[in-house]
Length: 117
Image (cartoon, rainbow, N blue to C red; front, side):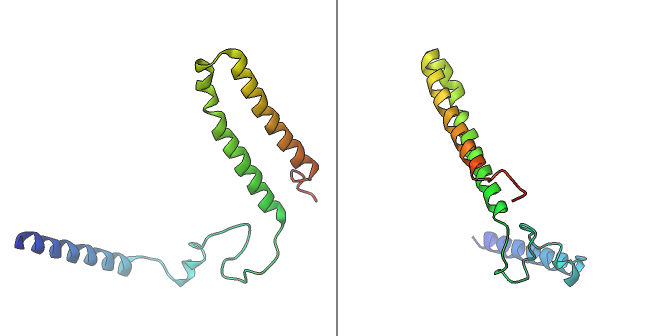
């Protein structure tokens, strides 16, 4: 039991020593802080969070998420083709594609796809 405790202390000392050595030797400086900051929608994260932004960033993100989820829902339809007959599979696929096309038509009517608004 004492051997395990001594080994544990030894491992902690070595790991702390390595981390301190890495911090001391690293070439990062205060000027590199900007490079390591996140970049989202063209905003500086160190500035005010209350500046207005274009809704097109948000709408494009929502469109991407919707179509991403729809693609994830299409994948189970492929093995379904072997489990059910062709007509059932075609009805399910047709219904799903109609929902996709109605959503795309709605986005088109709302000018979500038009970036030059």
